[in-house]
Image 1: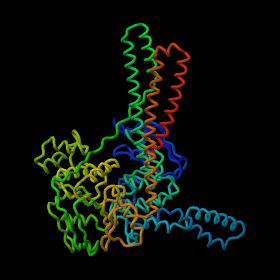
Image 2: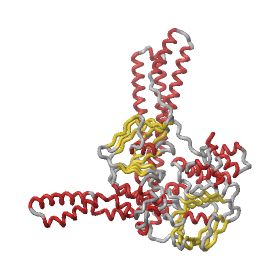
Image 3: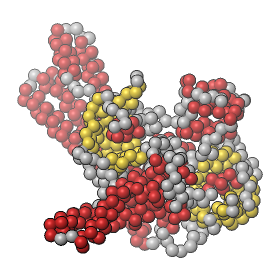
Image 4: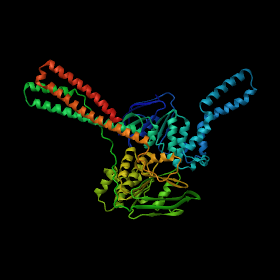
Length: 640
């Protein structure tokens, strides 16, 4: 056991953050901490690191545990200090200070031992052997290769290795901090949004690194694809409580849905049974005879002993989205012809040509710094390309979502309500409040000033403005940044149902998988187009043949083997569905039989016959055992 939290509670002033969080982390486990924004995930990290103290409960750590912590906020570390003048390589190389001191002592001993004799030589040899063993065991001979591997894996070019930290952007400093933590080889890594500021290639590298990492990892992430690849346990914080699921994010999602459905059904069934018995007792009491009152009291006493199931708690409120174009565009939506762009004699990309048709849902991907956002600014007219041109089609109404969520200086001083009202003066107060409520701005929240909003709140205001504009061509730059997982899923549903045209930039592979029908990969030398989602893109990228006209990823394979495999899967699915339907019918039939037994036990004829009552009771017990087995099989098949 590395770490255990048991019944931990924490409040800030009168606001309760968490009230019942319990979980266990073992050595080498890879664990995800999930929940909506504001659920208390980062608070759990602060409690583990000791930055905060729990109000109640216990946090137990193994002796001499070494914890590495990467906060989401880009403050408070030497690597993010704007006065840091060391190079990137030197700053990360500091991790190996102890190993370097050990190596220096080994080299000193090597040079001095030739002049020693007798006891002095024996003592020096023992020290030399001990240091050499430790140096090897602690990876002293691999420091350089490890350091270079991490720098390359996190997307730093060799040119950047020799640049001072204070010349880097905030995102680059955060990547540097992540690299430092990975090299420190902690027993437990706490990573808060580690994939922020990483391009897809770097995220893939990080997945492999963490899977092979010998320590344990507890991470907060909104990257569902990343969590599916890395984690083996998922802890959800919801309604200030925690629940642990053994498995990755997708398993957690399926298990939670199944568990909730079962809990809702069990609660509803119990409420139905309780109501039935209460009505029977009430009916018996209405007879007003002494015998009737005695029987009613007996039944009420029996009811009072039944352990009541708690009603399943409501899920946290989520935003609701419906994207509807005000008018339809023509079939030809947009053209880019021979675009080239660069700054300060540095070329970002050249020879970019593509066209966008109505109904296309395109993900634009590429390495960090390749110019994806710059290309978007060319599309919307904010920048002019060095060469080439862009053209709009007929009846195109564009909606642009800027990842910076930049508002004008004038807008910064407005409230959310004022910003919407001034942008769309024809809207009534009710219409504005209804729209903002769908983005979780309710009551006095609508009067928050724009300047005081978080990144996620600014993003929601921007999305609300795009929806009200009735755009039929959406250009979205990192639309899922600052959204929690559940809000991402709402946005995914809305974009899938959107009957306009869409192009977006995203590093979220799960999001791309669920929304894109085409992928455009941007490189310095041009673009490559793939007619499918992210899984299809990765499949084609691993094939040596050049990309040409491609079939949809949903198109079935024509090979006999794959056809037979698909038919077998479909057959298994039909058999499983049929068995589930039969089980549900048997469950219903068994429940009715149990109810019939209960009614017979209450009848005068059985009540007065001990032998008959015993037989009916035995029948009821057998039926209840059968029902339990039926439920167990039903649950297993439903989970599968």
